[in-house]
Length: 164
Image (cartoon, rainbow, N blue to C red; front, side, top):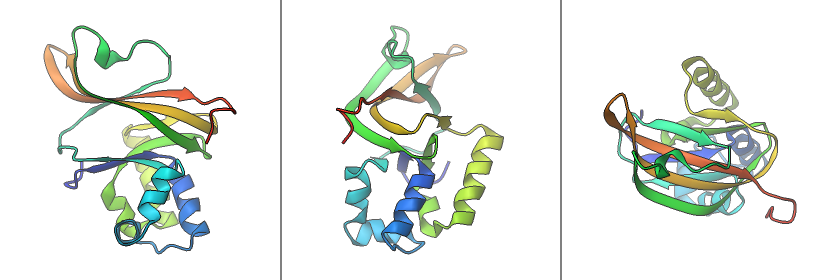
């Protein structure tokens, strides 16, 4: 886990496409903090920024089932629940990644990060292309007798009428 307390959820290859289409530099961290592009990626459903996240090893859950979220079950401790987010998927995947990748956001670095995520089973999920409603839950899940910091992403496909 990186020391920056900023996580992003999105299709990282779509973010790369967006960077190219908008003629932005490879330093997306600088771009997002010095102009309107950071607001635009959120408004356009490219990524969801998550700020103020403490630097812990988190359990990450992707919930596609439509069933009750794990963090809402009685034995777990729900501490945060935010809904109303929309994300676009164009490359069949969503990833939870951290701010430092944005500092040198090149096709090579993105490709390397995706490979690393696959090899080391980092938070990434394959999805059909399209628009999704996202709900973010945070808290603690009971695992092997101990409570572990957890984020759960409830992901539901948006209908054509609901897509932004």
